[in-house]
Length: 116
Length: 115
Image 1 (cartoon, rainbow over the protein chains, first blue to last red):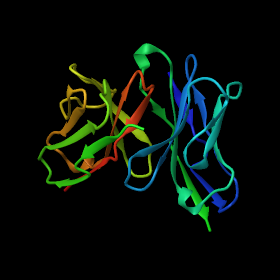
Image 2: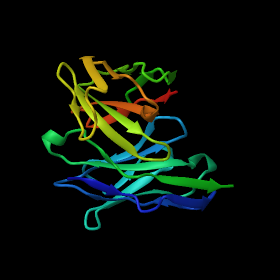
Image 3: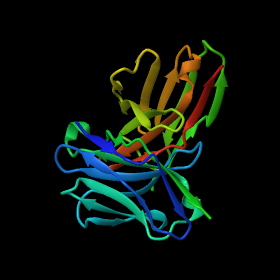
Image 4: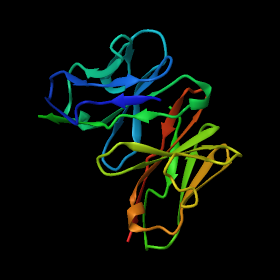
């Protein structure tokens, strides 16, 4: 079974400050990890993914995430937050087995609020 | 990335009617499409996995006779909510993918309101 935990319901940060959104996971085998962002009444927008390779993954809109196998974490980071980054962020994981291909397990989501 | 569309974006219907939602992959052929349901300020819940040309696989607790899924081609899947009731009101999101892409591409979602 696979699972994802996003321990914070909401993260508040001032514009220009660093932003971190936490994610830990549990999966059999090697994980495939994803971050998505959702604006109100919209679908999910892909930010970045980790499949294999470099533990530091760079994605869209200045976001990056670091895969930490020993801590089973995949925290999302942005060095300098913008007000327009205010949105709902989802971490997702899936295993590498054939029969679970594509079946993503989503975290509960973290609401990011960036204040001017 | 690849583009997935959904139609309609918003629908309001009376209780007891059926509603069909379309999900299309516009610039690639999707071997698999997924249907999710999302309640306000909550996470996405996978309802079913749909492979082209075969029956959909429903997640535990999802009524297959209530939520009919058809995946007739590599670019189109439909979700029909039959005899809709107010508790079916939700945000429905589809996604499409292929093994070669190794990821899913999400549609913009459909807001269903059942009166």
